[in-house]
Length: 364
Image (cartoon, rainbow, N blue to C red; front, top):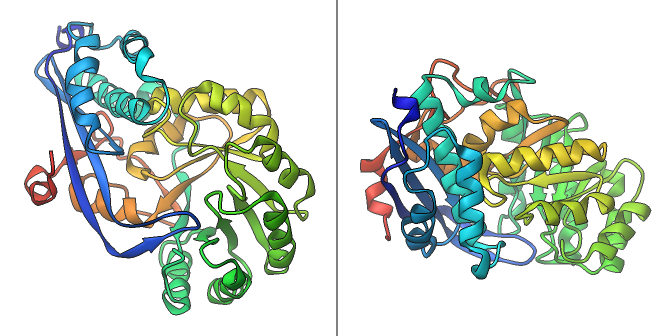
């Protein structure tokens, strides 16, 4: 039976895709994004996974991680995951190694679905048929006109109930930019801001009080995610109706355990936290703490797990990743009324890599 076949070849390739314009947030500027795609073979089928990381992890995937899972039963995702985490003990669990494991885990789930002829959402068990999304971009490198057009497009065209913008590059301009964003989207849509850890607790609290008049409902990483005391201070003192969120840099359950007491909403990124397996573990941990979960970026990869996750509030419809996933994957989701849904007629994660289209971006 194909489903009982052992895992065979594991391959990885890296692609650098230029952004459609310079992008920046409160602590970083960039003009390209690196996608690392992974394929795992067994029983005549090939599973596809990916992460947004650095090209250097391709060697780790094809070497140490491939050796760790070689010849394991194709359906034994938990066992393969445990073997991969053991193999990188001396490299450290966070950062690049975690993103590499995340991509392989996603490929294993896709492979399992393809072997069984089922979509991953059906394997996991759906709690919801459609997943709410929020439009995300609003980079600090954008002029106010482009900022307003982008945010308004997500509301008017895609039906998003919430949109998010970046802040922190020029703190003195942030209140004016937030005001421009609110004017562009109207009063009905929720407005989120993301500082990417740009502020001190005192600075973040002062800004939160200034922008509260514009109905800001979400302040993401007002301070560094490593500053647990600062996050706790913001959560305790932020204006009413403004949630404090963090978690995109959670690589393992210990990271989420430390964050849960100091945020209102936990974020998790399946391209960093151990794949779909780690994402669902983070969701379960959040549920145990009565905390909602929000999926961070890579919407096409998250979609099936997001259908199954408890207490899922929404999934980030991040401009850069949406553009890449539409370019390079057949089966990438399309918004309808502010939600996306998996195609239950397609097995696995429902994605097929457009290898020919991607080849011009390949760097490894």
